[in-house]
Image (cartoon, rainbow, N blue to C red):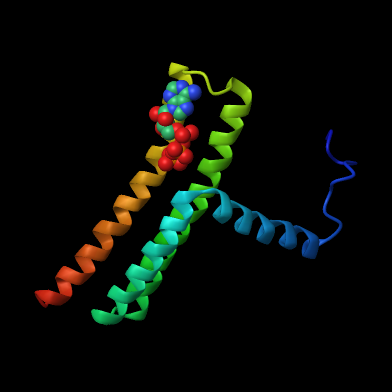
Length: 127
Ligand SMILES: Nc1ncnc2c1ncn2[C@@H]1O[C@H](COP(=O)(O)OP(=O)(O)OP(=O)(O)O)[C@@H](O)[C@H]1O
C-alpha cells in the first residue's frame, strides 16, 4: 500500500490514541454543532436525573448521543474535504452531498429526541 512507509505513520497504539484525542478536541473547537451536542448531553443528563432514568435507559440515550457526535465529526471531515475539492462556489452536486451527510446526523438526532420523549412520557403516564 502507498502509505505503508509513510513518515507520518503512528509508531504504536499510544500515538494513535493521542492523535485521536487531539482530533476530538480539534473537532469540538472547530464545529459549533459539536458544542451544541455538549449542551444536549447536559440537558439529557438533567432529564435523566429528574425523571430517574434506569441504567439501561441512560445507556441507550448515551449510545445514541455518542453516535451523533461520531457522525457529526465524520460529517465535518466530509464537508471540509468537499470544500477543498470543489471550492466554495455554488455547486448543486455539493449541495446534494452535504445535505445527505447532514441528513445522517439529523436522523440520529431525531431518534434521540424521540427515545428521550418516549422514556419520559412512559414514566409520566406509568406505562
Ligand atoms: N458549495 C456549495 N454549493 C451549494 N450548496 C452548498 C455549498 N456548500 C454548502 N451548501 C449548502 O449549505 C449547507 C450548509 O453547508 P456548510 O458546509 O456550511 O455546513 P454547516 O453549516 O457546517 O452545516 P452542518 O450543520 O450540516 O454541519 C449544506 O447542507 C448545503 O445545502
